[in-house]
Amino acid sequence: MNTTELPDIKLLQLFDLLYDVRSVTRVAEQLGQSQPTISIWLGRLREHLQDPLFIRTPGGMAPTPQADALIGACREILESLRRFSAWEIAFDPATAQRRFRICMTDASHVTLLPRLLAHMRAQAPGIRLEAARIDGNTERALESGEADLAIGYVPWLGGGIYQQQLYEQDWVCLSNRHHPRLRAKLSAKQYRAEGHVTIAAGTGAQLLDQALAREQVERRVVLELPGFLGLGAIIQTTDLIATLPRHIGETLARVNDLAVHTCPIPVDGFAVRQHWHARYHHEAGNRWLRGVVSQLFGAR
Image 1 (cartoon, rainbow, N blue to C red):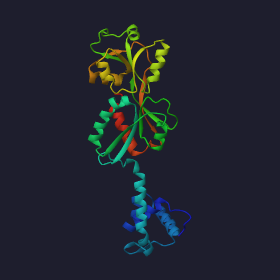
Image 2 (cartoon, helix red, strand yellow; image 1 turned 120 degrees about the horizontal axis):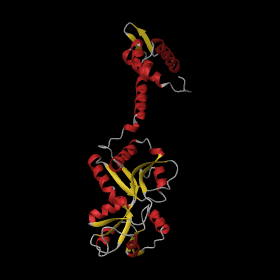
Image 3 (spheres, helix red, strand yellow; image 1 turned 60 degrees about the horizontal axis):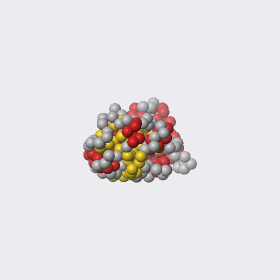
Image 4 (cartoon, rainbow, N blue to C red; image 1 turned 90 degrees about the horizontal axis):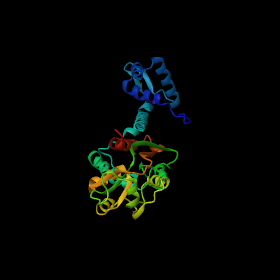
Protein backbone atom coordinates (compact mmCIF):
# COMPACT_ATOMS: atom_id res chain seq x y z
CA MET A 1 0.00 0.00 0.00
CA ASN A 2 1.23 3.51 -0.86
CA THR A 3 1.64 5.26 2.51
CA THR A 4 3.03 8.53 1.15
CA GLU A 5 -0.36 9.99 0.18
CA LEU A 6 -4.01 9.52 1.09
CA PRO A 7 -6.59 8.35 -1.42
CA ASP A 8 -8.90 10.96 -2.93
CA ILE A 9 -12.35 11.06 -1.30
CA LYS A 10 -13.99 10.29 -4.64
CA LEU A 11 -12.08 6.99 -4.72
CA LEU A 12 -13.43 6.11 -1.27
CA GLN A 13 -16.95 6.95 -2.44
CA LEU A 14 -16.41 4.71 -5.48
CA PHE A 15 -15.21 1.87 -3.23
CA ASP A 16 -18.23 2.26 -0.94
CA LEU A 17 -20.78 2.28 -3.77
CA LEU A 18 -19.18 -0.49 -5.84
CA TYR A 19 -19.07 -2.76 -2.80
CA ASP A 20 -22.85 -2.37 -2.49
CA VAL A 21 -24.08 -2.34 -6.09
CA ARG A 22 -21.36 -4.55 -7.70
CA SER A 23 -21.79 -2.70 -11.02
CA VAL A 24 -19.51 -0.11 -12.61
CA THR A 25 -22.43 1.12 -14.73
CA ARG A 26 -24.64 1.79 -11.72
CA VAL A 27 -21.79 3.43 -9.82
CA ALA A 28 -21.20 5.75 -12.79
CA GLU A 29 -24.89 6.70 -12.78
CA GLN A 30 -24.99 7.40 -9.05
CA LEU A 31 -21.79 9.46 -9.08
CA GLY A 32 -22.77 11.32 -12.27
CA GLN A 33 -19.65 10.16 -14.12
CA SER A 34 -18.95 8.24 -17.33
CA GLN A 35 -18.04 4.55 -17.20
CA PRO A 36 -14.50 5.22 -18.52
CA THR A 37 -13.96 7.76 -15.71
CA ILE A 38 -15.12 5.24 -13.10
CA SER A 39 -12.80 2.63 -14.61
CA ILE A 40 -9.88 5.08 -14.36
CA TRP A 41 -10.73 5.85 -10.72
CA LEU A 42 -10.97 2.14 -9.93
CA GLY A 43 -7.55 1.64 -11.49
CA ARG A 44 -6.09 4.35 -9.28
CA LEU A 45 -7.63 2.80 -6.18
CA ARG A 46 -6.31 -0.65 -7.13
CA GLU A 47 -2.84 0.81 -7.59
CA HIS A 48 -3.01 2.68 -4.31
CA LEU A 49 -4.13 -0.36 -2.32
CA GLN A 50 -2.11 -2.84 -4.41
CA ASP A 51 -5.04 -5.20 -4.82
CA PRO A 52 -7.64 -5.86 -7.57
CA LEU A 53 -10.39 -5.17 -4.97
CA PHE A 54 -13.19 -6.31 -7.34
CA ILE A 55 -13.22 -9.22 -9.80
CA ARG A 56 -15.68 -9.36 -12.68
CA THR A 57 -17.98 -12.43 -12.34
CA PRO A 58 -21.32 -13.44 -13.93
CA GLY A 59 -23.03 -12.03 -10.82
CA GLY A 60 -21.25 -8.66 -10.98
CA MET A 61 -18.08 -7.17 -9.51
CA ALA A 62 -17.22 -9.45 -6.57
CA PRO A 63 -15.03 -8.02 -3.78
CA THR A 64 -11.72 -9.63 -2.99
CA PRO A 65 -10.80 -10.58 0.60
CA GLN A 66 -8.78 -7.35 0.78
CA ALA A 67 -11.88 -5.35 -0.17
CA ASP A 68 -13.89 -7.18 2.49
CA ALA A 69 -11.24 -6.27 5.06
CA LEU A 70 -11.10 -2.60 4.07
CA ILE A 71 -14.77 -1.70 3.54
CA GLY A 72 -15.40 -1.05 7.25
CA ALA A 73 -12.49 1.39 7.51
CA CYS A 74 -13.55 3.10 4.29
CA ARG A 75 -17.08 3.69 5.60
CA GLU A 76 -15.78 4.96 8.94
CA ILE A 77 -13.68 7.53 7.08
CA LEU A 78 -16.64 8.65 4.95
CA GLU A 79 -18.90 8.94 7.99
CA SER A 80 -16.26 10.96 9.84
CA LEU A 81 -15.97 13.29 6.84
CA ARG A 82 -19.76 13.70 6.76
CA ARG A 83 -19.77 14.61 10.45
CA PHE A 84 -16.84 16.95 9.89
CA SER A 85 -18.67 18.74 7.07
CA ALA A 86 -21.92 19.01 9.05
CA TRP A 87 -20.46 20.13 12.41
CA GLU A 88 -21.63 23.74 12.14
CA ILE A 89 -25.31 22.85 11.85
CA ALA A 90 -25.25 20.31 14.66
CA PHE A 91 -26.38 22.72 17.39
CA ASP A 92 -29.87 21.89 18.60
CA PRO A 93 -31.04 24.40 21.22
CA ALA A 94 -33.81 22.10 22.43
CA THR A 95 -31.30 19.42 23.53
CA ALA A 96 -28.01 21.32 23.88
CA GLN A 97 -26.22 21.26 27.24
CA ARG A 98 -23.93 24.26 27.14
CA ARG A 99 -22.81 27.42 28.90
CA PHE A 100 -22.89 30.79 27.13
CA ARG A 101 -21.03 33.69 28.71
CA ILE A 102 -22.04 37.20 27.63
CA CYS A 103 -20.11 40.33 28.57
CA MET A 104 -22.51 43.19 29.33
CA THR A 105 -22.98 46.25 31.52
CA ASP A 106 -25.10 46.12 34.64
CA ALA A 107 -27.67 48.25 32.75
CA SER A 108 -28.10 45.29 30.39
CA HIS A 109 -28.73 43.07 33.42
CA VAL A 110 -31.91 45.12 33.86
CA THR A 111 -32.88 45.80 30.23
CA LEU A 112 -31.77 42.74 28.25
CA LEU A 113 -31.03 39.82 30.53
CA PRO A 114 -34.58 39.07 31.80
CA ARG A 115 -35.98 38.77 28.27
CA LEU A 116 -33.00 36.76 27.05
CA LEU A 117 -33.25 34.40 30.02
CA ALA A 118 -36.97 33.87 29.47
CA HIS A 119 -36.33 32.98 25.83
CA MET A 120 -33.56 30.55 26.77
CA ARG A 121 -35.65 28.77 29.38
CA ALA A 122 -38.48 28.31 26.89
CA GLN A 123 -36.45 27.36 23.81
CA ALA A 124 -33.17 25.96 25.18
CA PRO A 125 -33.73 24.58 28.69
CA GLY A 126 -30.28 22.97 28.88
CA ILE A 127 -28.47 26.26 28.30
CA ARG A 128 -26.72 28.00 31.19
CA LEU A 129 -26.20 31.75 30.90
CA GLU A 130 -23.40 33.66 32.59
CA ALA A 131 -23.16 37.46 32.62
CA ALA A 132 -19.65 38.91 32.77
CA ARG A 133 -18.39 42.49 32.93
CA ILE A 134 -17.27 44.54 29.95
CA ASP A 135 -13.73 45.61 30.79
CA GLY A 136 -10.18 45.60 29.49
CA ASN A 137 -10.21 41.80 29.40
CA THR A 138 -13.25 41.53 27.11
CA GLU A 139 -11.35 41.34 23.81
CA ARG A 140 -9.07 38.58 25.09
CA ALA A 141 -12.07 36.69 26.49
CA LEU A 142 -13.83 36.78 23.11
CA GLU A 143 -10.72 35.59 21.31
CA SER A 144 -10.06 32.72 23.72
CA GLY A 145 -13.68 31.59 23.82
CA GLU A 146 -13.95 32.38 27.52
CA ALA A 147 -16.79 34.70 26.47
CA ASP A 148 -19.14 34.14 23.55
CA LEU A 149 -20.53 37.65 23.04
CA ALA A 150 -20.14 41.21 24.26
CA ILE A 151 -23.27 43.36 24.11
CA GLY A 152 -23.07 47.11 24.56
CA TYR A 153 -21.13 50.18 23.48
CA VAL A 154 -17.57 48.89 23.24
CA PRO A 155 -15.75 51.11 20.71
CA TRP A 156 -12.26 50.09 21.84
CA LEU A 157 -12.50 46.47 20.66
CA GLY A 158 -9.80 45.82 18.06
CA GLY A 159 -9.26 43.72 14.97
CA GLY A 160 -10.68 40.26 14.56
CA ILE A 161 -13.97 41.27 16.19
CA TYR A 162 -17.23 41.14 14.24
CA GLN A 163 -20.11 43.36 15.30
CA GLN A 164 -23.80 43.83 14.59
CA GLN A 165 -25.83 46.89 15.53
CA LEU A 166 -28.90 46.20 17.65
CA TYR A 167 -30.38 49.62 18.47
CA GLU A 168 -29.54 53.31 18.91
CA GLN A 169 -29.42 55.05 22.28
CA ASP A 170 -29.95 58.68 23.20
CA TRP A 171 -30.04 60.20 26.69
CA VAL A 172 -32.85 60.97 29.14
CA CYS A 173 -33.19 62.29 32.65
CA LEU A 174 -35.19 60.65 35.42
CA SER A 175 -36.94 62.37 38.29
CA ASN A 176 -39.53 61.69 40.95
CA ARG A 177 -42.93 61.95 39.26
CA HIS A 178 -43.99 64.33 42.07
CA HIS A 179 -40.81 66.40 42.06
CA PRO A 180 -41.59 69.72 43.76
CA ARG A 181 -39.80 71.91 41.19
CA LEU A 182 -40.02 70.02 37.89
CA ARG A 183 -42.92 69.96 35.45
CA ALA A 184 -43.23 68.21 32.10
CA LYS A 185 -40.09 69.73 30.60
CA LEU A 186 -36.69 69.86 32.24
CA SER A 187 -34.81 73.02 31.24
CA ALA A 188 -31.06 73.45 31.04
CA LYS A 189 -31.28 75.99 33.88
CA GLN A 190 -33.12 73.51 36.12
CA TYR A 191 -30.64 70.78 35.12
CA ARG A 192 -27.81 72.92 36.47
CA ALA A 193 -29.68 73.80 39.65
CA GLU A 194 -30.95 70.39 40.76
CA GLY A 195 -29.04 67.76 42.72
CA HIS A 196 -27.81 64.78 40.69
CA VAL A 197 -27.12 61.09 41.10
CA THR A 198 -24.22 60.00 38.89
CA ILE A 199 -23.37 56.47 37.74
CA ALA A 200 -19.70 55.61 37.55
CA ALA A 201 -20.30 52.48 35.49
CA GLY A 202 -21.59 52.26 31.94
CA THR A 203 -19.57 52.22 28.73
CA GLY A 204 -21.34 55.38 27.48
CA ALA A 205 -20.48 57.44 30.59
CA GLN A 206 -17.54 59.09 28.81
CA LEU A 207 -19.94 60.51 26.20
CA LEU A 208 -21.93 62.21 28.96
CA ASP A 209 -18.76 63.55 30.60
CA GLN A 210 -17.56 64.92 27.26
CA ALA A 211 -20.92 66.65 26.65
CA LEU A 212 -20.95 68.26 30.09
CA ALA A 213 -17.42 69.55 29.57
CA ARG A 214 -18.28 70.81 26.08
CA GLU A 215 -21.38 72.66 27.35
CA GLN A 216 -19.49 73.84 30.45
CA VAL A 217 -22.07 72.28 32.76
CA GLU A 218 -20.95 71.42 36.27
CA ARG A 219 -23.57 69.31 38.01
CA ARG A 220 -24.28 69.47 41.71
CA VAL A 221 -23.58 65.82 42.48
CA VAL A 222 -25.19 64.58 45.71
CA LEU A 223 -24.66 60.85 45.23
CA GLU A 224 -22.37 58.72 43.07
CA LEU A 225 -23.24 55.05 42.52
CA PRO A 226 -21.01 52.32 41.06
CA GLY A 227 -23.92 50.98 38.98
CA PHE A 228 -27.64 51.15 38.38
CA LEU A 229 -28.62 48.93 41.31
CA GLY A 230 -30.86 50.95 43.63
CA LEU A 231 -31.03 53.99 41.35
CA GLY A 232 -34.77 53.72 40.70
CA ALA A 233 -35.64 53.60 44.40
CA ILE A 234 -33.36 56.55 45.15
CA ILE A 235 -34.94 58.75 42.45
CA GLN A 236 -38.41 57.67 43.59
CA THR A 237 -37.81 58.76 47.18
CA THR A 238 -35.77 61.97 46.67
CA ASP A 239 -35.75 65.16 44.60
CA LEU A 240 -32.52 64.12 42.80
CA ILE A 241 -32.30 63.58 39.04
CA ALA A 242 -30.17 61.19 36.98
CA THR A 243 -28.93 61.30 33.38
CA LEU A 244 -28.65 57.96 31.66
CA PRO A 245 -29.21 56.13 28.33
CA ARG A 246 -32.84 55.89 27.26
CA HIS A 247 -33.20 52.09 27.39
CA ILE A 248 -32.20 51.71 31.04
CA GLY A 249 -33.91 55.03 31.89
CA GLU A 250 -37.30 54.02 30.51
CA THR A 251 -37.01 50.56 32.08
CA LEU A 252 -36.33 52.03 35.54
CA ALA A 253 -39.12 54.58 35.03
CA ARG A 254 -41.68 51.85 34.34
CA VAL A 255 -40.66 49.79 37.34
CA ASN A 256 -40.45 52.72 39.79
CA ASP A 257 -43.12 55.06 38.40
CA LEU A 258 -40.65 57.83 37.55
CA ALA A 259 -40.87 60.77 35.18
CA VAL A 260 -38.76 60.66 32.00
CA HIS A 261 -37.46 63.96 30.61
CA THR A 262 -35.61 64.76 27.42
CA CYS A 263 -32.06 65.56 28.40
CA PRO A 264 -31.65 69.37 28.00
CA ILE A 265 -27.91 69.02 27.40
CA PRO A 266 -26.92 67.76 23.92
CA VAL A 267 -25.16 64.44 24.47
CA ASP A 268 -23.88 62.27 21.64
CA GLY A 269 -25.90 59.11 21.16
CA PHE A 270 -24.41 55.69 20.56
CA ALA A 271 -25.27 52.31 19.12
CA VAL A 272 -25.60 49.15 21.19
CA ARG A 273 -24.01 46.28 19.30
CA GLN A 274 -23.26 42.62 19.81
CA HIS A 275 -19.61 41.64 19.27
CA TRP A 276 -17.95 38.27 18.68
CA HIS A 277 -14.54 37.05 17.59
CA ALA A 278 -13.79 35.91 14.04
CA ARG A 279 -12.66 32.52 15.39
CA TYR A 280 -16.27 31.74 16.32
CA HIS A 281 -18.01 33.40 13.37
CA HIS A 282 -19.06 30.04 11.88
CA GLU A 283 -19.41 28.07 15.12
CA ALA A 284 -22.97 26.76 15.28
CA GLY A 285 -23.77 27.59 18.90
CA ASN A 286 -22.36 31.10 18.61
CA ARG A 287 -24.34 31.69 15.42
CA TRP A 288 -27.52 30.54 17.13
CA LEU A 289 -26.91 32.80 20.13
CA ARG A 290 -26.27 35.81 17.87
CA GLY A 291 -29.47 35.08 16.00
CA VAL A 292 -31.45 35.01 19.24
CA VAL A 293 -29.96 38.34 20.39
CA SER A 294 -30.70 39.93 17.01
CA GLN A 295 -34.23 38.57 17.02
CA LEU A 296 -34.95 39.83 20.53
CA PHE A 297 -33.18 43.19 20.51
CA GLY A 298 -32.43 44.14 16.92
CA ALA A 299 -34.05 47.21 15.40
CA ARG A 300 -37.33 46.46 13.63
